Amino acid sequence: MKVLPVGEDALLVEVSSGEEAQALHAELLRRRAEGSLSAREIVPAARTVLLDGLDSPARLAAELAAAELPPAPPRAREAVEIPVRYDGPDLADVAAHWGVPEGEVARIHAETEFRVAFCGFAPGFGYLTGLPPRYDVPRRATPRTAVPAGSVALAGPYTGVYPRSSPGGWQLIGTTDAVLWDHARVPAALLSPGTLVRFVPEAGP
Amino acid sequence: MTDRALAVVRAGALTTVQDLGRPGHAHLGVPRSGALDRPAADLVNRLTGNPHGAAVLETTLSGCAVRPRSTVTVAVAGAPCRVTVDGRPVAWGAPVRVPAGALLDVGPAVSGVRAYVGISGGIAVEPVLGSRSTDLLSGLGPAPLADGTVLPLGRPTGAPARVDAAPQPAPPAELVLRVTLGPRDDWFTREALRAFVSRSYRVSPASNRIGLRTDGPALERARPGELPSEGVVLGAVQVPPDGRPVVFLADHPTTGGYPVIAVVHTADLAAAAQAVPGTPVRFVAVRRR
Figure 1 (cartoon, each protein chain N blue to C red):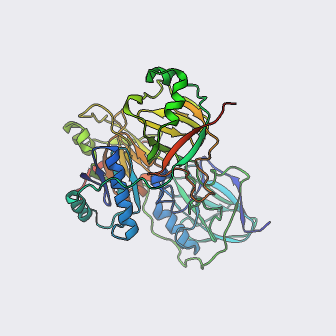
Figure 2 (spheres, rainbow over the protein chains, first blue to last red):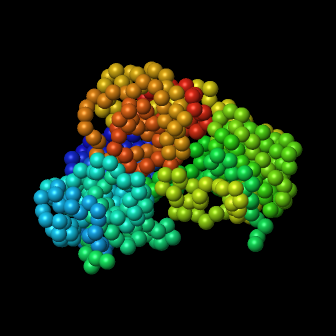
Figure 3 (cartoon, rainbow over the protein chains, first blue to last red):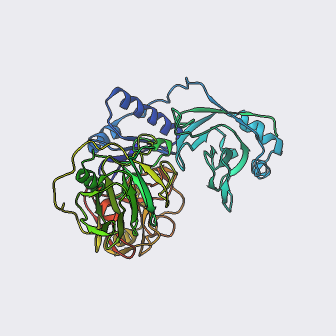
């Protein structure tokens, strides 16, 4: 664990894998819940957890640098199920990257258990991991100016679902009617860091 | 319809509703948002007798004009500007009574960028995740004002401050930003780090509520490749591939993949909010306390 000071009252804790980042994130949430950590924001990402709004960052940095990385948290919670039609315009490109027939993409994707590694880009947008590294795909060379809300998409090691229409360079493999973000709902975000996710295929239109 | 409301007669280039923002949701990809010049927003609330954090209007360069449907106390601060009520000049930076139906005109900024308009009772649009702020990155909160928009006002809770004028810093002729280096200063060459804290930059016209963009010497990276996305704080100085530093302001994305060379002290961000395009910028490295 490497602890980097950030500005006046934040720390960036760097670990060596996404799994370690998830374990660290869970441990930091546990500490905040029990009252032994005071932080305004705890933001997990690909290989890091950011702690912002700290009272005494130097003391916490020293403590974390000496701490053992916690074990991965148990996967006790049920998975959120997202119904999806595998009808995206980039299915053929993804199949080519994966080296499988086009029809296999849906099966492989729907058989994978995903986990929200972190959120970002837009409220409710989760970066989901779970596919083996051989299924990493590049972003599209030319991003689309408008990706429709509900698009299920791949980039690098991640799967994501666009909460609202926005520009985007991810490979689109399907569509869902699930509402990823609704600020009038509690909680507003369907997916938050650590959530387990399964994509459930629906019949096409 | 209640008469606790405000009709927008001239929305100006970009006028938004702002309060203290919605911190605490960065892990969901929700930016902090909130008034860019926090001391100015706090001041207009004090002057109008509003509680700390009541929602105010934030204008951009060209001001705005509004017509309250009931008599209110207003105060304008931040960027200096001409303020009139039904065409008659009134005080800037002090509480002013605006009769029901009168036209409050907040003129273009004489210097600086953003004027803050506090109104007794505060702007009472429906909060989203605990805040009434317009977030231009994510689209949360009320839309920017348009001509004809009617905004609800809350009930006044306190008396206006009894002051003639409140001291305020002038918008910066030169923007000096104190920074602490890191977390990714090791991604840059020694020459780049030296240039960053010794050369002069200028505020780019492409700046907005998301970031203060700069023009100036490009900062060269010491290593190739990409940084995996990581959490980013307010005031982070991110360096995109073009090498020009961007200072993250209130509507900044919560994670980013370009290296953060340094972080600006929070106390200096109000001045950054008032620096017009072309203003010289210097980054001054200070040691962490």
